[in-house]
Length: 148
Ligand SMILES: [Zn+2]
Image 1: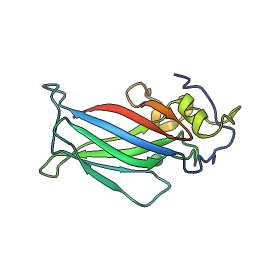
Image 2 (image 1 turned 30 degrees about the horizontal axis):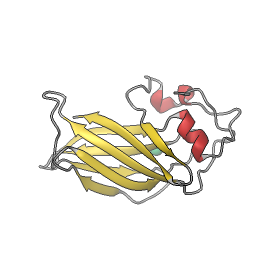
Image 3 (image 1 turned 90 degrees about the vertical axis):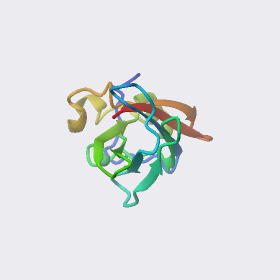
């Protein structure tokens, strides 16, 4: 992970590089998948909120695009988890790792904002960071397990 990689401008844009966000909901108590729980996901620069319900193995999968680095923030997406009864259980941000940002932004990174100085991740980002596979042409896939 290259979490100290910097972006050259605070408003760097990924220009629509596809990003699929895959989250797996697991119970923090039992470790079992949480099917039927709902997840809302959004980018702060876009008004739309997407919703999915976890499948029998606890997975949700959102077709999306790579988030921009804007307003002094490291590229991230927001999500919330709701119980089947509609109770909000978890609110978090998913940070994209530096090497994925370099792929999405075409490796234009020398100075500026870093994940280490992002005010929302000052408590550490190890639990907020996604695992990312893929490439800019075919699209990237960000995966993370979420304990609820
Ligand atoms: Zn945001």
